[in-house]
Structures are given as C-alpha cells and as structure tokens.
Amino acid sequence: MVDKKRPVNLDIGTFSLPLTAWVSISHRISGVIMFFALAGFLWMLDASLESPENFAAIKGWFAHPLCQITIWVSLAALAYHVVAGIRHLMMDFGFGEDSFESGLTSARIVVVLSVAIIIFITAWIFLW
Image (cartoon, rainbow, N blue to C red; front, side, top):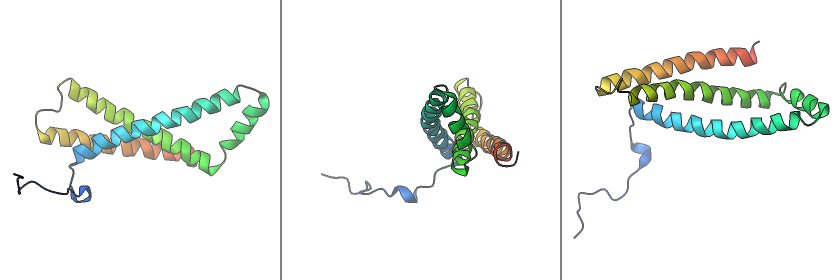
C-alpha cells in the first residue's frame, strides 16, 4: 500500500531556501570555480615559463576584457570561498551554532564582507 500523503513530484524551483543554505551552496560553487580556474592559471604559468615569446603572448592576454573577466570571476570566487570558509571553520569549533539566528547573522556577515571585498577586487582589476 502506498502512502497517499507523500509528495509524488517535488518541484525544486518552488523551494524557498534560507540565506544560510544559499551561503553554503555558494561556498561549494565557488570552490568548483576555483578548481577550474586553478587549472587554467597553472597552464598559463607553465606556458609562460617555456619561452620569452610565450610570456609576452600570455602577458598580452591580460589586457583582453575576457581575460580580465575570467580573473575577476576567479578572484571573486576566491574571496567568497575564503570568507565563507572562515565561517564554516568557526562553526566547526562551535561558534554560531547556538540557534538559527546566530547562523543567519554569520551568513549575513559573510555576504556583506564578500561584497565589500569583491567591490575592491572589481576596482583593482577594472579601474586601476
């Protein structure tokens, strides 16, 4: 006999996740972005060390807007991942696990700090 009260089809698009869940999911996504960015940066480092011509070519890439956007995404992911990682480490040590409110407060701090650092990174890459 099948329980009729059990949902048959869950529409994930209708779920409303709390900020703490979004911070945790975004932390994982930023880690994946950093993983792939690291592979690209290591490839560029290897190629730049092969010859002076390759170094000059790769140095020229950094003036291209697509490369600047890639660097921005990589540094933004790194900044977010570090700030959210510190939050997770603090929670591993027992800080901020008292209640949902303390977790929500730490998630808000992560978002605010990350946005501030990403604004600085944006100014550093595109304005200076």
